Length: 93
View (tube, rainbow, N blue to C red):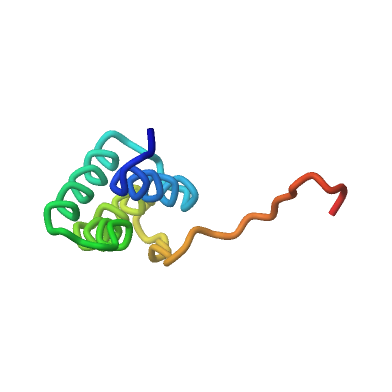
């Protein structure tokens, strides 16, 4: 059985959050699910983009940064997760 568009988009949102170094807490997962439900109800054609905008507008993307000690510089949420070097197994790099 094929996954629905909303399942794929939710998977992308959760993967983006993990790759961006966010802890997937129950509150963050709940916020992602609510943002996805709102985006589907709105009839958005770009569910991933709409969900990410809702999370950013609601402050959920910055919630993990609020745990930083006072006075420390918290980086803004980037558009994409950081690049990480990888290998597909052709040998040493």
